[in-house]
Image (cartoon, rainbow, N blue to C red):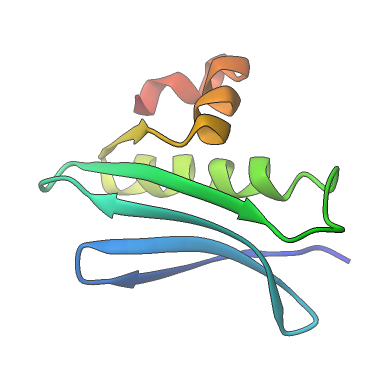
Amino acid sequence: MTEEVQLKINDNKGAFYIEVEGKQEAMMTFVFAGEDKIIIDHTEVNPGNEGKGFGKKMVTKAVEFAREKGIKILPLCPFAKSVFDKTPEFRDVL
């Protein structure tokens, strides 16, 4: 079963999230900073979902989103920052 990362945007903020069987199990929130940057400020994964790679999936989706839109990401969230630190191929959006 593949959990697709979904995106919702509300004015200048948004979230990437993963639902499993209709229940939200993970979320990574961000805010737009000006026209050309998003700031990832928080990542949370519900208990029991550790080790499923949900956090990394959401960061990956954020990177794809940034590349599509031609914008940059500022990962203030420690988790997101750690993924960027470990994933050199994502650094083009920093």
